[in-house]
Amino acid sequence: MLLGRERPGSSIRDRVRAATDSELDNVPWLLRLTPSERRRAAAAVVVGEAEPGDLVCRIGRPPTFWFGVVEGLLKMSNDNADGTSMTYSGLPPGGWFGEGTALKREPYRYNIQALRRSVVAGLPIDEFHWLLDHSIGFNRFVMNQLNERLGQFIAARETDRLNDPDVRVARNLAALFNPVLFPGVGELLRITQQELAYLIGLSRQRVNEALRTLQAQGAIRVEYGGLRVIDLGALRTSGSAGKEGR
DNA sequence: TCATTAAATTGTT
DNA sequence: AACAATTTAATGA
Image (cartoon, rainbow, N blue to C red; front, side, top):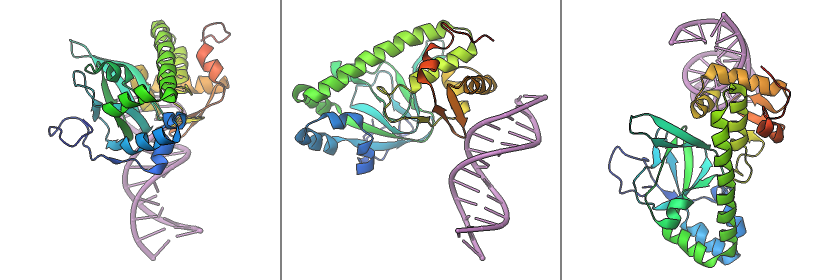
């Protein structure tokens, strides 16, 4: 779908190009490859721009790429029969996804949609399989990725049961700041309060209030257009053992 | 480089 | 949801 032969009006409006060097610097798994593997993989990686609302991949489509976020913000969601949709996760820079469907060559089970203007990278599925067959480092990365994502989904199930908005915001932020899944984020997560509200399913006002509470607790710092993590552990455990009441 | 203006984002009600 | 205040980005001298 990142390929140019897409039906008009659907998916990414995409001109795909080869990745630039600085974009390749933001591809975490390239560092795990041997030099010759890296040369081959880097040449295969393509990038495209996604406008807000664009679908990077769609439920039911056969997997053509393993995708990664170079810049911007995506969301992973699922459509229900009644027309509503459920958001599973936000995908900030450094995150790679779709390995499950790529591995089995089965259709995507979720939609990936751009929340803001984003740069999305893709590794063609045949190259993905070649790396699985030839590169130990790549296998380590994918395995680690799957393990970490499993942990994230288990944590997400608990989070969804919580009713305290402050805690839900904290846990969602902890997930987005995950350095293993999203190494491109670093200390500063570029996300607006509106986008965060949309991901978590709260009003922007309530998110704003929660963020300022978390800032007062010393867990984060609120900045214009983004959030800086001060204490990731506090975000993860907030509301479970502790002192904060509301 | 600086000043001005528009746009985006945040803070409040 | 609406509005004001603040921050950033864009423009042009």
